[in-house]
Image 1 (cartoon, helix red, strand yellow):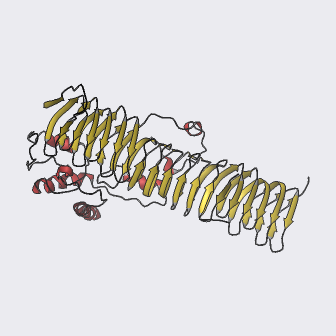
Image 2 (cartoon, rainbow over the protein chains, first blue to last red):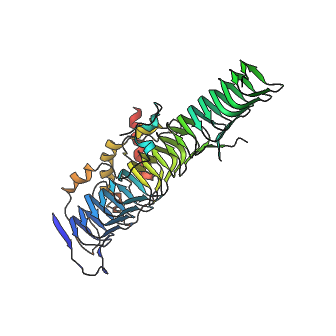
Image 3 (tube, rainbow over the protein chains, first blue to last red):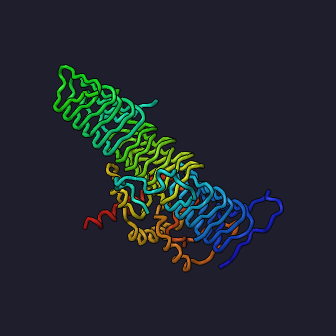
Length: 139
Length: 104
Length: 217
């Protein structure tokens, strides 16, 4: 598989961009930020921000970035140090992990959200009656 | 203090405990423990033991009632159960079957 | 005084469940499920220890259970949910905390649709299970359409694209037009024009119809 590496830029004024007519098959890694308007098939591992524009399509098993904003299509597991945002029109399938995961109304998504946080103590222990209800099935 | 309202069209099944007023216009099955007043409106169906500071009943209640202060059955009330309170009034038109204990 | 909106006050605790046909707002603590055919609001101080099912659900407090909305589920900033979330429209605000499986929008081949029907007493289950068949259907439709067809072939099984990728020739042309007529199979996004996120796309309807017919047999 080909590997595309984003050159290390001292100033991040110019982002790396995969244009709408482009198609990359292979792993993308580097600093970023990276804007995808075309097709990417492969993992993405960048230090900077990843943006998938509305015409873009990313299919990777693993996608890592500082932050991820998706307006287009993405399939894969996303792991961001910062926020993960799905805006209206996005079509995403996979698991999302980030400091804050948000999904706008109008985005389509199927997958898991993995956020580290605690529920209030009243809900965290078995401090509940036998009446759990069928809707309360839990993994 | 806010009021808990169990409106018509809603059924609560279980034990309800609260520090505030409760108004029941829907259905409640279980048990009620309120620090303040409980109002059972006309049309409501309550199948529960109720303990409160005071009760006003205009609907249907099946269960034992215990109030610190008073229990008032209004016209249209249908109560089956024992009532224990310092003061009890049963209005004309109220239906009641049970014991009344006003032992202070 | 009784209104259509029931309110479980902040100092009220229900060791049981709440069901019905009206709207309910929970600002206290409900240990069991809340399953109504109206709207459900779990206020900032509200806590629900089991699932929530309703037509429209808004969570500002905490829920430990699945959220199933017939129309929509919204988790606002400050809301905390541990459980699955399913609705045609799902909004999770920045600052909302959700941990679980989320399904927003109707997509084909979504797993565990059956769980929706069992959990939501009043919410109808959009039972669509066309996974395996859709896999077969989609590639044919796409190949014929030379990549421009906005077939909402399910962004479904993750396995299919991986397997198909190996057989698709590499075409990396930076800056050029993507003319390749051999698109990745379940990749409706081939089209430069993004289809609107409509819940039902004509081609999708057709696939579903065929599946429904097959199931009836």
